[in-house]
Image 1 (spheres, one colour):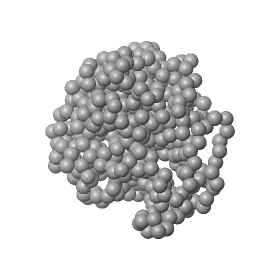
Image 2 (cartoon, one colour):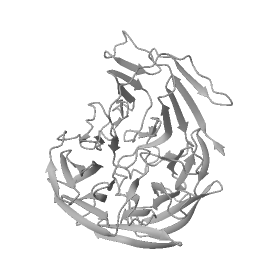
Image 3 (cartoon, helix red, strand yellow):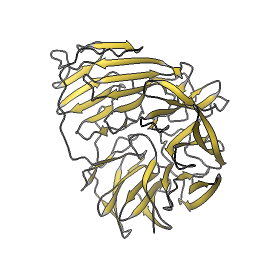
Image 4 (cartoon, one colour):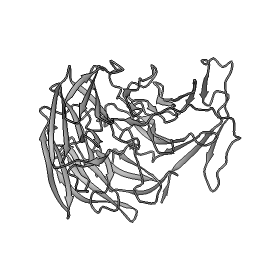
Length: 454
């Protein structure tokens, strides 16, 4: 295993007074009062003195819907579809940019954000009758992706704070804490009327991932050293930051990758790839010499596996999802190679410490060059046969296909026109009453829904 440079930061959080900050605000940085201890981890873990933590309120939050489907970054939709597909087309007031949805007991609630930030909301019932409803927020700042929350009875958008980075979204934790990246790259954690501020130098468009323990993971340490610029700007990350709010004091781990490389993406996948019960951190790493490769880290910052690089700089691998695509017992990685120039769908298997391509198929594109939308593809069981299917646009981004691998052979089990070029992420959700619901917005000011059920 390759050991990376690994900085372990443990913050002691105390209340600040007379420091020029707002009332009930805590700023954690090198220049303020909280103690900071930076430790190079060798064979033992050293902890600074523990201090009193701040109690957090409990809410009735049941579900969060984000554009990448799961809070661990995995674009995998649970549930199953069926042999029948029912399309629903809705005219919108403008070109859609983002779409999110949540299944409630007797309906599906969908929110669409237009490119100018306006929000339109809809309800779809089990009879496939759709009606527009009033959203709790009429508009978002253009560029902010939406987050839809539910308490089990209603669905509502989370209002982004005024100082949030304009290219990302907040995350609401089960205990009611609101976490987000501000316009200075700090992590802001608002809870029980108190604000904590962590100087983490986050990527401006980083997505904050969250696991079942409430830990947070995101990309950090932005650099413009790799001038590829196909993901919305010229900035890419050089670090991965893992925060554990359950420890006393709060712990922050920053994994610094090889200084030759950058992480070409806006979020990792945070999944248990090797089946040992512990999540791995998976990213696309790139450099000007050999281009992109997929790298798997453990949660101590060690490289445990990687793929061969493309071999040419400024060539990208779009990491989509982890699912049981081929064998049905271990997780495979779904990747699209060079989605902007003859996209190739690839399946990677973890074999003895290396990621190997087991299957590939040309003619599909998961991303439009220059966009921050990396969520135009997903994995789900489209036809209820127990085999995960890859749902991805074709190279023109005007048709949507579902692909399955059986006995090492690719089969296109579903293909539909989108009645326009895709302009949003691909939404996927499962409703016990309605079935599997896929959604996409197009440049023709349309919302396209497909309901798959028996």
